[in-house]
Image (tube, rainbow, N blue to C red):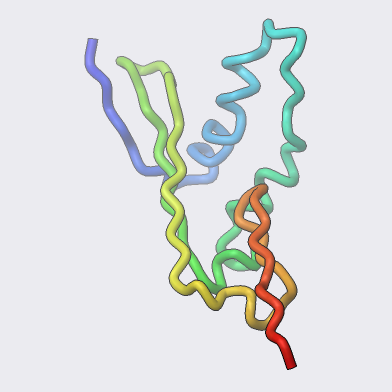
Length: 102
């Protein structure tokens, strides 16, 4: 039994990354899944606002050939990321821009 961590590189990998929690918690009556299209757009590096000021690398963790986990490593390049907006959405966490006194 070996554990391997692989970078998400293909659309198929991304779908597996997004679907993993749904598969993991499929029998949990209290699980409320996130909307798939919202998850997919959040990892769209061309269109999602986060990627103007940061980057992310996604990983799938396998035990043998079964996905047993997922990892999202996110990096925000600048603390001034919210300069052009009142806030920046970091995958469900919102950073509000500090108001400057005039």
